[in-house]
Every structure is written in C-alpha cells, then in structure tokens.
Amino acid sequence: MPAPKELDPSASLAALYGAKLRKLRIRAGLTQRQLGDKVPIAHSRIAQFELGNDTPPEDVNVKLDGLLNADGDLVDLWGHIKRTPYPDWAQKFMAYEARASAMHKYMAHSVPGLLQTEAYARELLRLGLPWCTGAEVEEKVAARMERQALLQRKQPPLLWVVLDEAVIRRPVGGGPVMREQLARVAEAALTPRIEIQVLPFGAGGHSAMGGSLTVLSFENGPDVAYLEAGHSGELVEDRAMVAQHSYRYDLVHAQGLSPEASTALIRKAMKEFAS
Image (cartoon, rainbow, N blue to C red; front, side, top):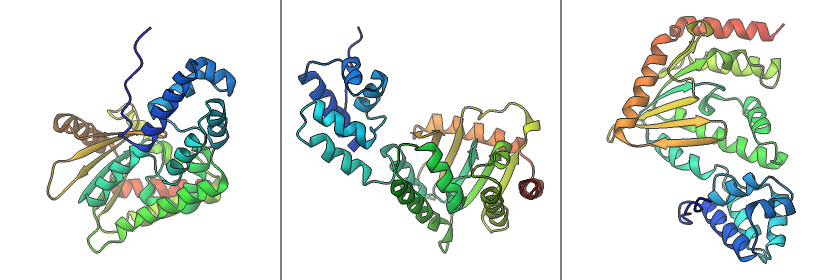
C-alpha cells in the first residue's frame, strides 16, 4: 500500500481541516473506507476531504465530528471555511486578477464571472453546488457581482474573451435568463477595452479542449495562467508553462470568429431563445 500523501496544514483552511480530519481518523483506528461506511459516504470523499481538495457538506461534517469525538473542532473549522465565499484555490487567482492590466480568457462552458448577470450566476452556482443552501448560493452570487467592479474602474483592464459556441447555445436557466445574459455579453462587446469572440462548432478540434483557460498580464511582472474545470482550478506561475498556455490561447483566438461576426451570432442566439 502506498504511503499516504503528506499534508501541509498551513496551505489553506481546507488543508488544515484535512490534516485535522486525518489525525482524528487515525487516532480512532479507522481506515478511510471504515469512516466512510459509518457516515455513510464513499471513502473517496473522505480522501478528498483529507487532502483539502473538497469540504464536506454541513450534515456530513457534523457526523464526522461526532464519530471522531472531535468535541466541536471540525464544526468550528468548517465554519471558518464556509465564511469565505471563494475556495482557497480561487483566492490567489483573484488577487492576481485584481492587479492585471490585461485578461485573455477562453471559456469552455460558461460566460466568465466578470460578465455574468445575477440570474445566470445564480443558476450556475445552484447547479454546480447542489449541497449549498439557498442563502449560501446568494452569498456567492453577491461576491461574484462585487468582483465585476474591476471593469468599472477608471482604467479597467483589457478583457478579451473567446467563448466556445456551447456557451451561447446551452440554455442555462431557461430562455429568459439566457436572453438577459447574452444581451449583457453583446452590450459588453461594445464597451472599450472589452473584446468578445465566439469559437464556432465549425472550427472543430482546438488546443484548449481540456477546459477554460485564462492568461493574466501585468504592467510590472510576468504573466500567469489559470486553468479551470468545474469547481477546481490551477494557478500556473512557472514562466515556461505560462508561455505554453499563452500559445494555446493564441491558437484558439486565431480560430474564433471576428468580434463583429461573434456579436452577430450572439444576437442570433438571443432571438432563438425568444422562440
């Protein structure tokens, strides 16, 4: 059996929670599978909790606290984690985003958060975080809307977005929600320092098919890249790797429709959602 992966409790609150959970489980003489059976949840979920890659729902956390005789320690840690509207893996990226002078994004599945309407964001979060309560979803929606202030600054960053055609075709939230969202995107395309392209289905395969990709540039300092898939993300700071991801973005950008043709396609999709 391979040795368990070493944990760094200082990496994040989620990592601290995971290290505490592993310590309590081992003290109780339980394997991950045995603990999972007692909850009951899959033992793979226990592994993800211990690695800091996931945080349990509140009811599961309460059961874990009781099963492991944690005396409320897990409940207290969980509360600190949940008071932060963004997961640890996203916070460092957003700190970079706030300083960026240019953002180049390829979006595989959804409109970028900086251009989302409240209704669209709410539906994405509700679907993607089915374990969250309505109040928790609303907290995350509010935090996402606050981030959009970046584009209202006196000197906003350049935002260049390439949307996969699936983004404008998939009816997230139904027709009215999509019409409002696409109207928001079309309006943004008319704003200085915002460029919108659509990568059409007809372009076929492309270099960024693994998920969404963002490259951030700064007036002083090297570029960074951010890879996102579902509710996980990876910040890339190594210069050689960032250059490779920037090249991938450039290839996708070259395959996209012109901004003018993209806006026309977006407005056509709006009309289709009205039928």
